[in-house]
Amino acid sequence: MSTKEYQKNWRKKNRLKCNEYQREWRIKNRDKCRERVKKYNLKNREYHKNYHVKNREKYILMGKKRRQKNKADAIKHLGGKCIRCGIKYNGANACIFQLHHKNPAEKKIKRDRASSVNGKLGKIEYTSWTIIKKELVLCDLLCANCHFIEHSEKY
Image (cartoon, rainbow, N blue to C red; front, side, top):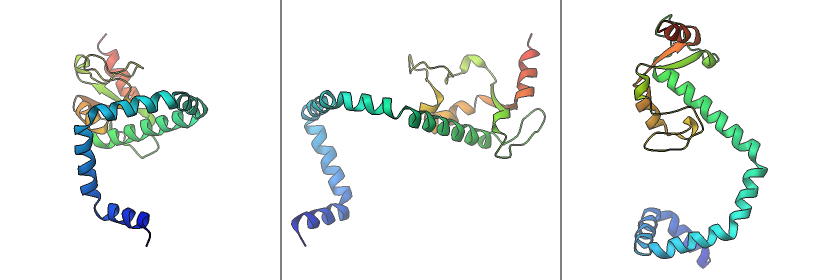
């Protein structure tokens, strides 16, 4: 067995030790790490910029899939049916369900393109599931028709 293979196997067996050592080293050498990152970013800025431009469709598709998964999970989390008329979620009809905030003033996740500002969250596809679950406590699950009726009754 060569030295490289031995080292690789040792790292696999002692992964937790290695991770702890690396974490401690990064804490002690924070300035070195920052300088390394700055050099890397300056050197590879154009590459990363071009990569995202070339793979734009891939990133759009990934965001779409993440939104669809989050919506399906949210529907299941809220019981899987409209609280007014009782229509059930069947896996294919997610597009008819909407989240109705009981108190719109408490809304934290906005559906706009704004980034995180003043503690308010930006686009939902960049939001973690744990934060989405906290937001779901403030919401009711309604179908689109019932949601429209809910808002039209207020006027």
